[in-house]
Length: 245
Image (tube, rainbow, N blue to C red; front, side):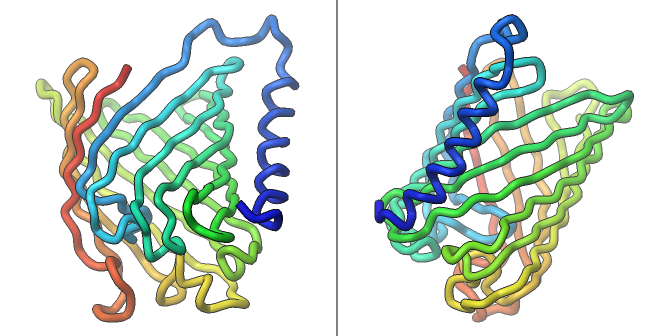
């Protein structure tokens, strides 16, 4: 990793360390960490493939450190992703804070995205969300913002809404989502990583199955980016199989 990449990463990791040490030991969560493992036919984020349309392996770790606060890490294989400068993987690191206020579930998070195998690709973003549960159905609103960084050629804002509902008497959940990405750009080539055609809409729907520690899903993802404008930005059906430990 180059020195110029190391400095912003150290700043984000320093913030995570302070967040963990700022919590008194007496308030620490007694619950242990959770681990998830998943295989997927593609790594789609906000309608775009991060793995050039190839299958991926994903591993996640969430470690509670206080009431409502956890430190999270996720690693996904990319195997030479052209979108991310030939990176072989993406590692997402950061804290998540969740609080229930009445019927609302409020959340805030910080993430640094590290790209092993890619030069000058790492960037950070913050996000906040609000969700409401109505019987077997839920509605979640989320906004994620990446401040101006050279690795992404400007800044990036993504807002989304997701609706989901469990099918009564079954282990299935159906969901639908819509999102929009926008932002300023001072380097169109780097900005194309997250916004290959400038501002755009993404949408999708899916069905998920959960039984004990096992899960499976089938999800459709698409964008309004014109065909031929960007690679791996069109319609795609993604299958997943996961295990929680």
